[in-house]
Image (cartoon, rainbow over all chains, first blue to last red; front, side, top):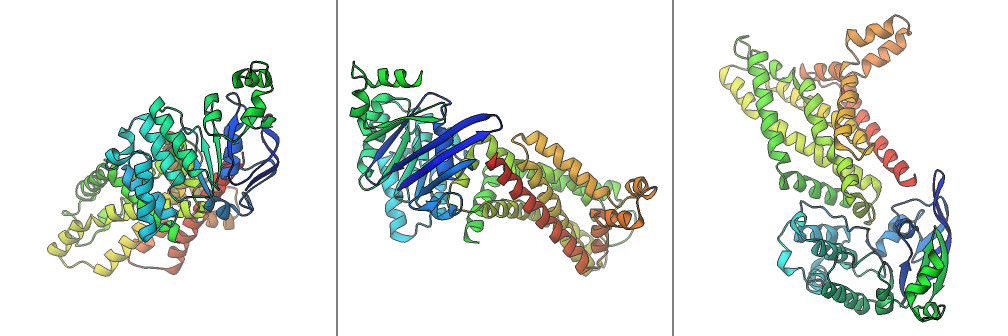
Length: 236
Length: 244
């Protein structure tokens, strides 16, 4: 369970996120939509414990992200915006490092390692250093570190950015495959992605939550029935 | 502590995954040798000790240690990998300590590789090995002090050049704190107690007494507290950045 209550973030005079409250339950795949600079990434960073909220509360699996940060992070797999990685490491070394931090051991470690490598098609680049990889591979390495410990909650900031159509299809397949009984939050600019993987969508504009509905419910708000038109009507 | 070890191993491996480690070690060894033989006149003075070697350490560290420490946090912030690291289930302290210890071990390795100088004086004469060992320990502690200051400066900025310059300036003040140059400025107006306090912060005073072979608990405590202070300052700096 993810729960936020009146979550806010102010930078001096700028308000990045204001009074955002929502809940996500197991089995839900929540799409986070909104124009650039609307506060999607800041909200996700607060949930991941990377940015401290200036107001309100957030919890992951019942653990407050500020007062019980370690337990909250243990429940979470997080792909930061732009999928930052350690460029000088090889893909294998990097995943071993994450597996160490996630305390994966023995047979389970090997099983999870094999799973993410196969699922994200990383076999061919395992021994390559990350800085030599293409954008698509880097994104997939970032995804691999977010799901390697099979967390109950995943927050993925633009998981398909920089991927070609085939790779996008693969990643959506991955999300659908792991979403049962899990909580997944993805942010995206690609509205068709919402239809492909999300059971629910939240639209954020200027730091505020302006819509929270199923994809069908959102589409019904426009006469044309197109998500794009709904998005523009709400956020412009 | 388990996580400290994981962070430490990753950091240490990353030094050797790039040419940074090799360039640093080679330059360090070349400079220490050149200073010892040409400026310290190791041969000409006709004494079997390593004083000419250790005398230059504070000055060498002044430029070389910030070159190690500048990347500690500034690079992570520049590339954004700090977000990846800090959203793993580790505490801020695990990361601060792990990174510092990796840098310290690396500096220790470079220092240990100067052992041929020890072999040289041992071959030429009959040095006081206890004093040399004490001086090595003192030099290692001093490197830790420089690194802790550098770690804090690196946490202040995402620009490695700025981190380097800040660290050099801060370390310079600590090296010179006990010199008559600095103390004269204070002596004219400040009470004697303050002058003494400033003098007691000096790297040089503490390092010199250890490098003479006297391992005084107060000198060790000084470096330990200095390191602790700047590592706590590092984590507070990072904490404030996160809340900003």
